[in-house]
Length: 393
Image (cartoon, rainbow, N blue to C red; front, side, top):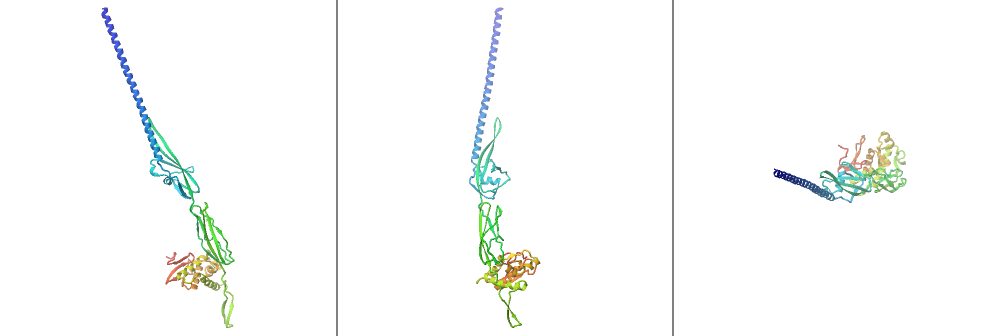
């Protein structure tokens, strides 16, 4: 019995030992499996991170390469007073074909230019423009990230003022000894950006001495651009008064009378007729056509006679503005006085003329017969040889 019991005990011990061995083996297998899985996971994460990091670096380099291809135009000039919008800055400074999805920020003299804003170049100098080119790069490493890649360029633009100021209304003037003259009258000076400019006059006119006087005119804009011109002022002698003769019934001969009285209508008309003859002898040259004669007469009145702005009856009583005397002698007249002067000049030159709207309270002009056709001449506005007046229906 004892031997049998020992055998059973040994058998149990062997089974327990075997079970322990099997359990140990299973544990080792499980532990190895766990370690292997963990190792594989770590390896996968490392490779995944490294792969995405490599992709990210590649994409970043691609974007940087894309930005490097954006061509900035460096040498630029612009005219003083010009205006650029945000789009103009991009179009004029950047090669848009290489732009891609790049965002652009424009900064001029430290001021950001917004999309709908306009910048005006009002100083002659070098303007520094800062251009920021930015691309936003999105990538994922475990979680999502966003990164801005920026390239900054500075461009220098030279603002130049190449446009000369404009002088208008320069023309020769004619006065009579003793008359006053405003040398700046009718002359205007302006700049497209700076606006109206001061007119400078060089030269003087001695209105008490007959002769020709050259006058220089100039103006200068804000940036030193200067325009110049010149004209001649002709100072004529006062018209000589002829000795007037008339028949004397009482003596049967002639008696010498004084010059016509300018205080009477008839006297002023007589003086105007004499002045018309003198003017015609001066401005009408041999060989002139009728059209050339009529144009010379119209231009003479237009250039030498000022417009009488006060056209009241009281003014006419003082200045005789509606008489030929006012235009030919006093050198200031209303349109009616100009027309009457043109009529006397045409008579003296052998031309037939008409006074349009005579004795009416509206604008008046002349028609002169040229080669069988009545053409329009307006000595107040300088119109010569038109087939129709602008005021005619």
